[in-house]
Length: 234
Image (cartoon, rainbow, N blue to C red):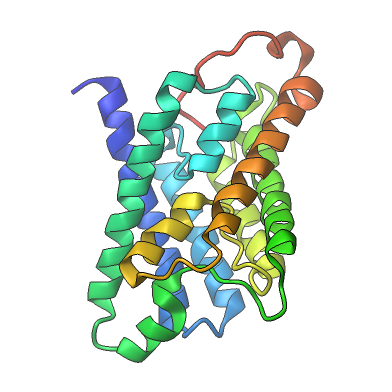
């Protein structure tokens, strides 16, 4: 098995773990306990990054992969394969949750199997801006704790914390997806695609802004030059 194949399997497995636990907490609480939902996502991501980061970089998010490529820290040729692996992990998680909670169809229907949704009165434009801002925060933490040569090696801990914090502030606005695959997996399983553009455009715009800011502003000057593959630790 090649290193790239192993990395793709790690991305699929880590994405499955992250989403099954995170979206599962939404179904389990009927979407009513934001603290529990934030902790479930944050803890699951911290463990997934710590478990699989050495194999794949621990992205588990097409927006993270895209942002790293924009910053020159992941090869563009591997963006499609990483994204496919993440989407497959997300789809398996969505259908596994539908199966696991089949005994409670009311919770599945009410939460759309954990699919993120907009709060009452939130417009599409506002939602895109909020998703972009939350994703910028996520990517800044990825760069600061996992990518920078100056980073303290606390990637899983730091990244999990920012996801939990983002959900606490943005969960009631957009569901705080920050991740197109996080939306897509349960959306397909629930056949619920409302406001799909928010969860594609917002995270990708935020990832691009964060990637550019790292590449041209925050990266140590000697590391700003050419695009190089990210070592599997992020």
